[in-house]
Amino acid sequence: MKNILFDFISKYISLTEEEKNVLLSLDIFRSIKKGTILLKEGQKSKESYFVLKGCIRTYYVIEGEEKTTAFYTEMDALTPPCVINKKPSEYYISCSEDSILLISNSDMEEEVNSKFPKFDLMCKMLSEELLAKERIDFDEFKTSSPEQRYLNLIQKRPDLIQRVPQHQLASFLGIKPQSLSRLRARIVEKKS
Amino acid sequence: MKNILFDFISKYISLTEEEKNVLLSLDIFRSIKKGTILLKEGQKSKESYFVLKGCIRTYYVIEGEEKTTAFYTEMDALTPPCVINKKPSEYYISCSEDSILLISNSDMEEEVNSKFPKFDLMCKMLSEELLAKERIDFDEFKTSSPEQRYLNLIQKRPDLIQRVPQHQLASFLGIKPQSLSRLRARIVEKKS
DNA sequence: AGCATTTCTTAACTTAAGTGAACGAGTTAT
DNA sequence: ATAACTCGTTCACTTAAGTTAAGAAATGCT
Image 1: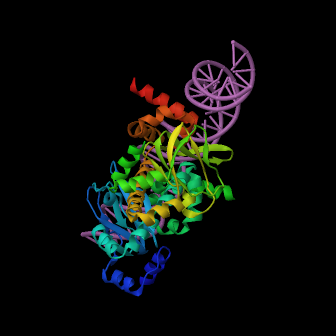
Image 2: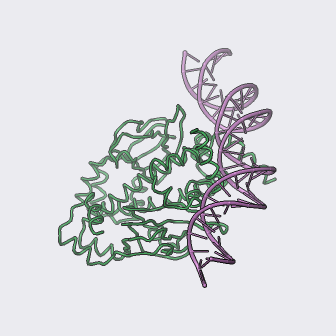
């Protein structure tokens, strides 16, 4: 687990053994059971998540219905908007599988940053990269049909289709579960 | 113009007069004529944009058709993904109105950052904030219908509907221009 | 001013997504 | 073991978006 973390960090900055030890001493690894709700709508939070193993998902409850908007899997990082804008959360975060997460809070980050300014640099690079990715994803979503989005997902995140319930995938694709079922049947039909 | 920039920066960090002067000495203000293409598909670029006045838009050309995905207006900042991932750009950026932009390039930023580490901090805060906003926008897009998205746009960016052509708005909303026309007629119908 | 182009709207038709209901398979709880 | 849920799929029907085409209005060009 530690290696996954350090491999990830090394994509951005290099760490000395001492720095690695400081990070480990923070004791931020957590085993979380499937189904655990990490954040609820209306709550304020300072926690950020980094997925070492497993999957977490964000969802809104709109008119009593769950609307899943994102899945975060191995090597994905999530700082919920409520941590940044300091308002109550608009959405829920729940743990989709038994997972190992790195959970940090923003006070802790400030402390680490003051000791290792390098860390700020990594956070900057990471959030710039994530912003660029998010924009590309959003653009792809806007410019394609539900069917194209599904086919695109098969290419880019084939694991998701296996590990996540279809009705959650449906709202992730911006459609209803019935439409996803039909769309899948249509694709199979076309192939033959 | 200068004041707009410094007001914006002051939301994140405070600058001394000297630092302000260094920024101004970089000579990064540009007047750009409507229709100017700032970035083309396939190009590599190191330029970031900050809109002081006017509007720029990003669009893809897919099967010969323009697909507009974003508009950046006063006080909006845009660093295209190609600057971050160092690959050729997937999209075009064009100037929708006669505009005054602040155009910086990543080499220049590194130089400023090395002189004023504060600047790095601002970039980090800004990109974290923009990432949070982008995610919320994406979530709203996913969880609503074209009609809701249009009504939402009227609330959040009423100026856009006036200053931007309908067919560009349509693809920004993820639909065809004809559908936007129809949808608008439907809304007027409902009101009466 | 006159012509060409672009933009917006409307209409008729096609295609696909939303809705409501029903069913079987699989899971959970008691 | 059985009842209660959840989940995925299918069906029939409704609604809205995509498509193709045409025409009017606005804009740009020389």
